[in-house]
Image (tube, rainbow, N blue to C red; front, side):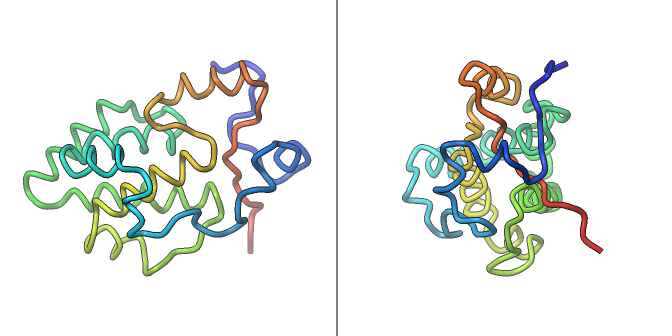
Length: 161
């Protein structure tokens, strides 16, 4: 569907050659869990409609396999019964896997139970800082990467035993 654009790639020369690769801390979150003030737009959006911020993040993390509208409606429905964290924490785990990020300050489960809005904001900032803009959606990010001749910034670490 996306032609010859490498969607997610493991560590390799192409990733290291990207202009942003050397600037990002490898294996660390680029912002803290409570650094919501660093992106006021995402902070306000998440405070008012967290399902929208979550859905945009999820579409990117799942490489477009879960449409933004579906993720948003599921998150909204679970939010009405106070269980949106059940759907949200696995997405955080996938994001961490894509970027080889540590599970901090505690497990993804507890981060989302204790502070889902902060977690969603941090995940959105991480995607932006890594070069994927959640507000554009998956297909538009692919087109942007193709147009700018940039390898998608998502790194999946090699298999560990």
